[in-house]
Length: 100
Image 1 (cartoon, rainbow, N blue to C red):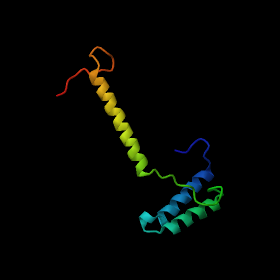
Image 2 (cartoon, rainbow, N blue to C red):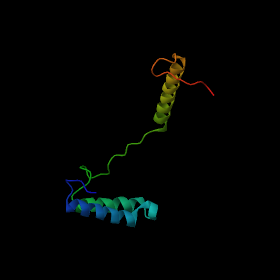
Image 3 (cartoon, rainbow, N blue to C red):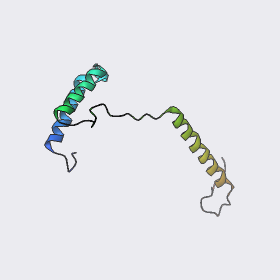
Image 4 (cartoon, rainbow, N blue to C red):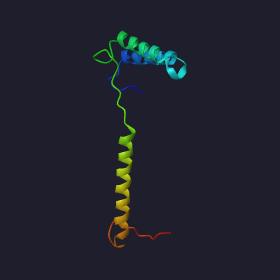
């Protein structure tokens, strides 16, 4: 569904990019260079694209960052679980069941 600010030019631009993707996308047998060139050509034809004319930067999350986040969250979860197990049953947030 188009956004309220979308115009016919926006729809034509999206359609042209989809056509270029169907023809040149690497997952469909095209090459990466041809795909990027086709998208740049469509963007130039519609006066769009990155302000510098180059490709947009790609943000990559490293596996180390993911691992540190996972370890930190696991530690917080285990600490919370440990505290909840030690609270008396009448305290809000405590565990009210035993280990099975």
